[in-house]
Each structure stands twice: as structure tokens, then as C-alpha cells.
Length: 162
Image 1 (cartoon, rainbow, N blue to C red):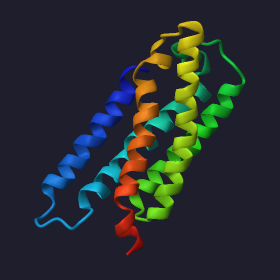
Image 2: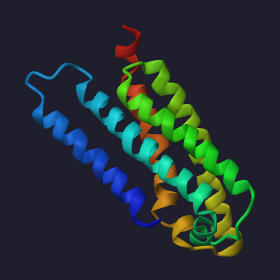
Image 3: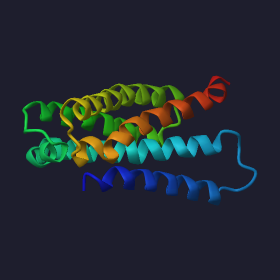
Image 4: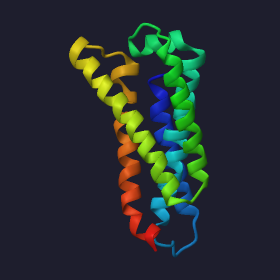
């Protein structure tokens, strides 16, 4: 499950964005594609994936720790609660069109996932930990998700200022 959820959330995000773009009447307004990508990334890779991670770290802590290659820790509850907040903010951001709210969610997501990615890379280098929850798709989406949010928000900045 740890291997597939990050991949599935990205597949769902891109498929739903593609479907929304395909079904929209022509001509599509400027920024429409960027908005649909932002919405679906906030909903799936940020929102639902973070809620899934929260569930794992809070309710199934031993299994989550094992998938990362770590021993269970009381800090998992704190990581789970942080994931819960990010997940809820991502779901809300998917349905709000406020550029500033989405920026705030992107900054929070970048701080958390960027730090997690750095931690995973340190673990790989220091201990050779190649567990699926440390070196698998989670690592890639810990980099891809915040990077894509920041790029899409930068692309939509001019329209948000107008």
C-alpha cells in the first residue's frame, strides 16, 4: 500500500485534471489548465495522500514505521497530526479559488514534505535504508508535490494579481 498510494494519487490528479480540461467548453479561459491542475494536486496528492498518511501514523503506527524501515515512535502521532492538518488544508484548497490560500498550503506542504524528503535521503545515505516507505514513491512525491504546487502557483501569479 505504501508503494501504490503516492502513485495512485498522482494518477488520479492528472486523470481528473485531464478530464476537466477535456470536458470544458472552448475557448478555455487563460489559466484554466493551471487552475485544474492545482485543484486536483491539492485534492489528491496533498489532501487525500496526507489524510492517508495521518491514518497510518496515528492508527497503524507500527505498520507505518515498519514500511519506512524504522522502529515505532511516539513522534509518529505528531507526524500523523501534521499530516492531518496538511490533508484537510489541501482538500479545502482544492475547492477554494483563493490564490493566497493555495500559496499558504503550498508553503506548508513544501516545508513538511521537503523536510521529509531530506530526512529520507539522509537515511538512505547514512544507513542504506531502501524500504518502500523511505526510498520508494513516497520519496519522489515528497519532492514532486511541493515543486509542482510552487511552479503552478508561480505560473498563475500574474492572473492572481489582476
